[in-house]
Image (cartoon, rainbow, N blue to C red):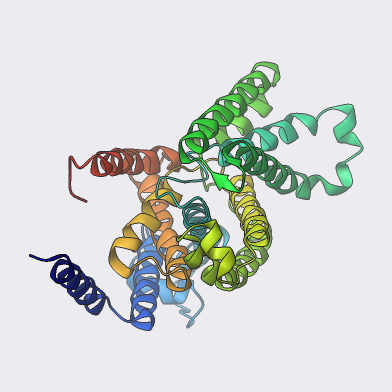
Length: 366
């Protein structure tokens, strides 16, 4: 077969693959329907089960005067515990998945992930330091921002880690993927060493709080924390749609993107700040939850393609589905106790990550 014929055959295969992909609107609607179904299941199951027939009354969609104390209990469970927790899981999952998609587009590497390269660990170290700091003399002078101190510290820790990582991996306008991954592992080790030191000096209460960040849990989700997550998620969605074209062109290389009219350096700065803010806020609410940012974007690229204008919002919805489902399993699989959600996401994501590595070496098909 001639070279021209072979190229034509490959082009036909690509066009055939593109024609099999569903329309963007249909994809997002299907994902939203899946998210609604997952949230509905999460509302009904748990240590205090609420049958589907009683759920509308518990949500206040209609009144049931005959229910009595049972209705009051259902409403308390739904509005005080499950709705905030489900909303927090959806927002955190969306933030982590979008962070992974942005990092993969920025570094042009499907293995990039905020938790894998130490960004989440940097945020967790800063959050743990804030926990210990609040009981010190210096922390007493910061009581006026006590509730905001934790998310601010987590965002700052994630931002510093991301900037250091990018500075180490980039030279002469180019980013070394190998150095990027190795530097991420080194920064994660340094952050974990710092967390270990804080664990050593912490008292019992501080130790329990720090353990929460290490294992990851959504048990502390409240309406107040949702007010921290919601603005960041809204800003991130708007910003992601704005940088989507730049990330698409950046796949060709930084020089090609520059000649296509993309301000590469500004795109890098915006992406770094976005990833740091999204990861830091997520860590401040639920601790370190790994592999969400690597599994979700990679699977979506196989299904809907690499175009970031669809990939980023689809990642947000899919990450929400994954984390709401994982949190539902975490609080029911060992009920009335609760399994840390970070254990579940690691159990799902680690084999997937190994499969990706083997696929890159041509040993398996994924």
